[in-house]
Length: 79
Image (cartoon, rainbow, N blue to C red; front, side):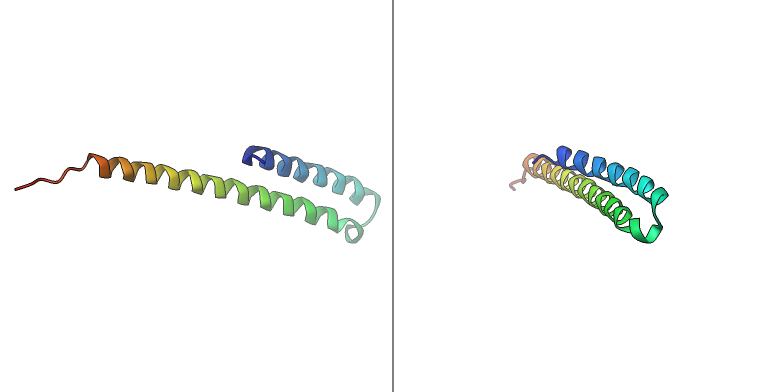
């Protein structure tokens, strides 16, 4: 599964669970609807983790490409 699709699903899950939690909270107590709030927060945390992980991978890839470019352009001088 692509990372963009995963992030979209996690964000949609976050919003969906949050909306269902608000509706359930109005009907019952916080104690009985707490699990929906926890699911919403869990999806949000996984979304953030996925986003940070992909940005770190992109940063590493860019640094590796830059290091490879620099090492190719450097020439040794023979005396």
